[in-house]
Image 1 (cartoon, chains in turn blue, orange):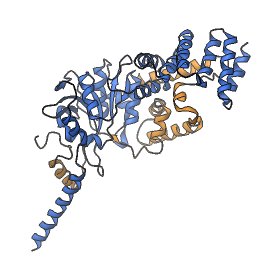
Image 2 (cartoon, chains in turn orange, yellow):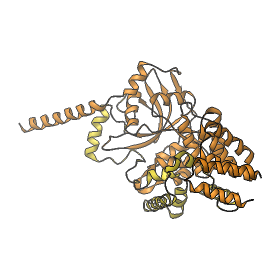
Image 3 (cartoon, helix red, strand yellow):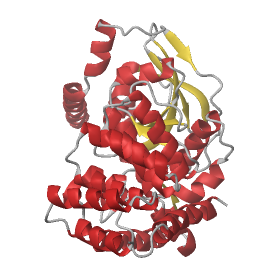
Image 4 (cartoon, helix red, strand yellow):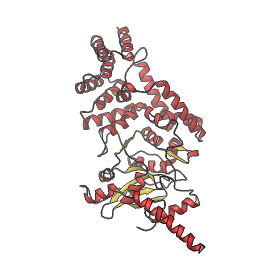
Length: 315
Length: 123
């Protein structure tokens, strides 16, 4: 009687859990992908992506070292751990992973969260650094991995994971564990490369980050790549100008600002920066005209008024 | 070595901004252009950076390393981590699972809903 009760309760629990999980266990992207296969090779494996078996809690540094080595940057997990590992958290934050790649002059470009984009990047030769939640929403088991390939016929993702050089995970399961980690994925590329699925906004975010932390030469190269690929992007030209200015290349800065202004003649900040550039080139009259124009466009801006004062004093 | 590079990178910016013109240059950086006029106050960012630095040190990162690590973050990243360092995913490994939760996870694992033990059960 008693055992029967217990068994019934156990059964009920399992049943409830199954229903609960069944309800949210769908993998919508996988279904769409299989219904309408993209125009890419049916099987890709980037076997040359290096592998470091992770030390305790160091899956971030190990995986990151793999993708960085693949880009020709010589670095070992311990060096990266110094930049990302937080002992009490027993892990590494995404923000610091992103920051660490910049310190090696590689661009951490965030992908759009679509499974198809991961496959397209792999087909283009770009391994993808992903965050996974291998556990549950209520009991997360966070883990960084490198996706190095896929097999469309077998519906498998191929990964470097933890202490295992090569594991596979079905598309459907990968989608679930990835979805529980917010579909977070990075393509880590050199500044003269652009991940095939990257949006202009995502790529420019990565380059602007590089500029903000003071890696001006790398940011400059990134902006160069961006303006070639997306000539209609204001920030690509603006950033190219700003970094050229910081490098002391005022001629290049001027032409980049003018190209940006051709896209948006009312962007007051550009007139401000152009004014400083013209002053550096010794063209005082034009500089004053440019800064006055910035103030006309945005009369409330205190910064531009300061600029006017400063540039007037240069005379 | 790497940390030294970060410091050098920052010095380059500061030096470039400071020496390019006689007084404080008022060039507008690309991040500011992107953020627009709604950009957060510099003093706020400084306070947030200090909060993160203190919490990294609390978390076991050495004093000097924490300074350079915070310096390697952009303002947007600082805003992301500020006040939330314990809530954000900090991925480490797949260990230390409590027994009861372990049992649940065995079930979810068998059902193909989790993947704590890769390639088990066999596909």
